[in-house]
Length: 450
Image (cartoon, rainbow, N blue to C red; front, side):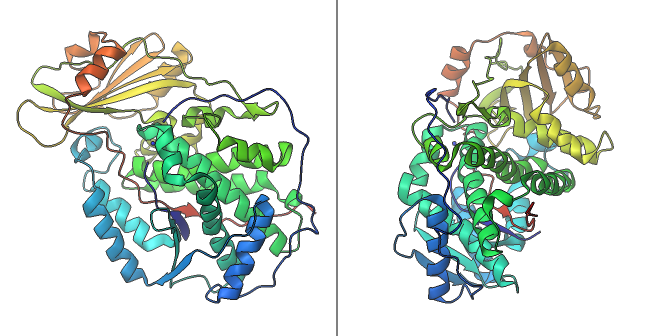
């Protein structure tokens, strides 16, 4: 599966929108100038793809960004350098114990290898440049589709400053994945609508249901088969979740409502809320409900090193890993959209005074119902992952001395959010939000209904 990518940071927040409904404004089919198939290594072709992408989005056509043509070898070197500069403190031991990383894999190496092998283009919001990897497709339309996706990021950045936008979402993994759902979902839908015009169709004729059915199967298999299922889920789910959401907004309410998602606190701030959808001209109310208790502040023999929220993406990764272990099917990852996760906090602990990264994970998740908490716990096949259920809240633990029924006694305590926040002010290991090297699936081509 060849992919294109947007290189940026990861980030979190909340959402809201006004109730007024604007009339639907659609770009007429004869408004945008549709270029013939062309070679994206030629500036004239790049200008034509930029013009139709901007037109489809209702933007003015700006000057061309810098376009870099790089070899796969050069790209691999750049990735390695970026990784050495941005790699987080190692949480690998703890991730392995929770089966979110294979026993013989490293999170950074797994992400780097897959990215170097698969990425065919990316937009860098720091340099404002588009890089095209030399090994592009032999099909000109596919290359124009790839380029349109990256130029959509260029247009987003000009309008909203993507680095500032991601920062506005906050710092948790779940929040930054939500930011990427907005950024990547919009680019997927923009470029796919452009592809429809390039192939002589109206964007209204795109069979989005068929497109997402294919994409769902592809991504589910990729996550279940990955050596780093959490990393794979963080990388890929934003494209499906964001694109499904934004395609519906654009088709039902027009491009103006998509643009509004980029403003203020309108777009959903968790992946769970992206799953919740959009209706009556605005995002659905947030499904978040605070945890009754936080993970423990003190665990005997360990010190708290950091905390994060994996959100519904973490749930999907666990379901994918469970499928790989023989419990369920790869498609079960999509239960993450319906199982009713309301909040989660995962805390990492390391041996007291030894330095290094966490070796013990305690993950507390709140679900909509007690039954949902039991249903998720029952799908986890491992005897070395402890679990304890408190009403609608599930506590998972993995690490030294933990078994299915043996957890640190500290999980019985009930710290407050304020207590956890105070404890984290002195932590020496940040939340590990630098795992992902961005990518976007482009091997799925849409079918049309006309």
